[in-house]
Length: 273
Image (spheres, rainbow, N blue to C red):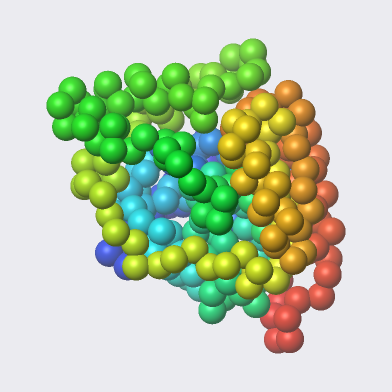
């Protein structure tokens, strides 16, 4: 396994892995996961791209209090600290929120393209929350984090379609070490609203597993219609974790998209890292 490094960013210590050579791609994981979710992608891409992945603050081995505002700032800080003048970003589920904010923010000129994997879209979100965080907070308070982990493992977002043993072992490993810092801290009001997707003017690949929840696929459909430069795809034989359920197809589609847009000219004065 590659060695971890740690970067001090805005009061948090973020775990980071930096592997491979070529055009850089930053991978941003989803809720209750960590950087190890991307192992099948690193194995496939590191020979052709520089693959960077990190534990979002409050998840995995990173410290700090999670929030959308913190995700956006951390992405911006990582790009600056690593001197990445132009990069592709892959954001998965909750991690896609920060990726979209970064693409619409002051560093938009550095982002060559976005991959939004199972992304939530606030414009289409109504009714009961998809992830019952209030219930999980109560479980953590009254019965402990193991009770939260046990219930989360039965949620559709944490259910794999594949029979591949290594994928199940990897998901179990990440779930078993989810620290629940966000739940134990209580609800965190956000000082950042998710920017209107129409303001995101970079090429975007909006993808879901074909077996993702109906509601999340509908969000992907609407996001694909709303983003001005979006491509929409479904990964067959996959649920909410298509990178683990069907890594071969996921790797092929995402790498092809990034390669196509990495070759396009960057903004004036930008150079590839």
